[in-house]
Length: 381
Image 1 (cartoon, rainbow, N blue to C red):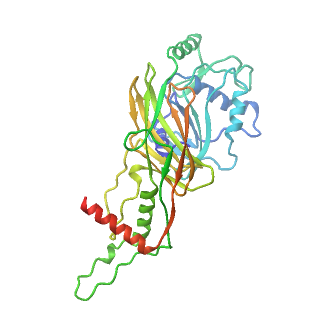
Image 2: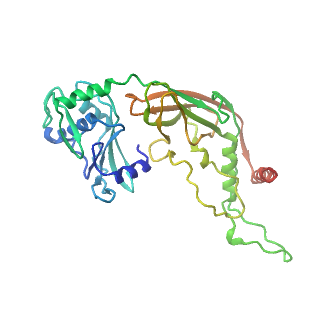
Image 3: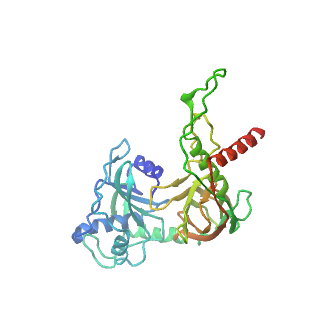
């Protein structure tokens, strides 16, 4: 799923050679060949266009220049399955085309997105289908599609063969920049049911505190803080470019799975809960590194970091550490995808972390004792 931040950027960019808005979803189920060929032609044109980054077709968006595109949405009914679009397109082509079809929510509306990475070209159908002619290379010029000239087709081959294979190393480190281990001992805390926090009533000789600022979530915030502190595995990622050319629009995507259905959380390090206060403390908001986020809108949380351009020989570190919080003992698999314009197939890496430790149930008195200990330690620091 595309993060909301990227969709917001795309709706403000305006149509061009790498971006097309469609107010409606393509006709697919029970559609005629001519109607379905519109989808096929647009995907081919985007795939064949010379560019540095990914190309996008956004459905449920209406051009509204000079303002950002209007999000009009498409009906949730009639959603198209990615596997059916993949089969429909690739069974007609001379070589496999990598792309992704997704439907999701954005700005409160149902939308659809086709994402087409940069890859070796040209793409064309081997048999005429609807309005798409056989052995004809379509490409996008500005906001319109057309047929490529022989010179344009020649330049596609020259441009794609001018670079060698993209080579890179993914570094998975701990917070001290040492290679991440694969076995961890942690404590897993649960708590008795926690009520709203209420201050003790002062005596008649004491100044009454300001009950309007009382933090009624203090106990629950404290439990969240202690849970996170005791099970935290902090992970630092970096990418080293060993190619002879730059990797552009590089990004990392991280997801987690587990064998036994154990619960877990994934945050950026800046989003870890702080030691709570008994009074509500209104602090200025801090958004952290805008290039790194955890997207929880999809079926599973996705840690996404945009690295930008990584020059030959350069090591680019992710702006914010990944905070992985296993909530029970077990085996957890971290899956990392490496994407860049020059990488034709996303690089993938998997590693299994085994987490052991004791599960402890704490009373509210034990919770208070631990919070007091941490509060005293922070005052001493």
